[in-house]
Length: 311
Image (cartoon, helix red, strand yellow):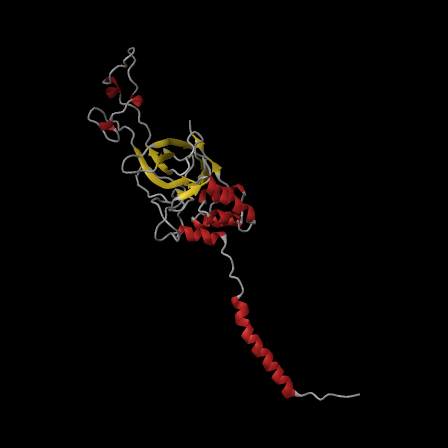
């Protein structure tokens, strides 16, 4: 039987050659590894930071006009010492840029910091054509919306009576309105009012407008008539895309899978449809991430309440 002697030098040269080959190949191998794809939340944060194309005027958070008679929200207002308490403001889940939709009557999602039990507070919606130097036409509203008992996440579908026209830019507005309690009319002031044109029934003080008295005290009466204050206003622009863009989006959605479906909407700048699809799918990590991007990660119920006009 022939025995081979172990040659340590020869084996060491072979090992050195192998290590050198691995060192040369490793950078090439690493360079060919595709980068990890950005998730939905990364795309959302990029859009909210303004790292997109053209931008349009608007605010996704209400700029409050304070009034001592109008205290809304059941949370502590945000301060420098308490930056996390931001849910005392009206928040609409939409970035500051012009946003598009394929729908004639898309949905808007928002956080409302009070419910119907909040005294003297109303939520009002308005839709108008884009303001130009010549005109601004209100096509829907002002619409007072019926609120749930508690504050929370809500959804509102634009009125079916006023479908968005393709290519037209519109401005939507949500307002938190404070209406002071209607006082009891002063009997002396009521006696001085003229009688109705038909019959001898005195005019009800609640049915007339006296601009000079609105929100102030008149010398004829100690009564202060009600004043309406817009406490917060949130607005933005919206545009409906045409059939060609809708077809391209639908084709891309067919080719996408569950992990990239919502990002596909953003690839085509269709933000509103993305949020609606995400909400329709029910609670998920993506939905939670979206809420967190708007500082709403701590709300108790992530399921939106459907708003409807108050008649």
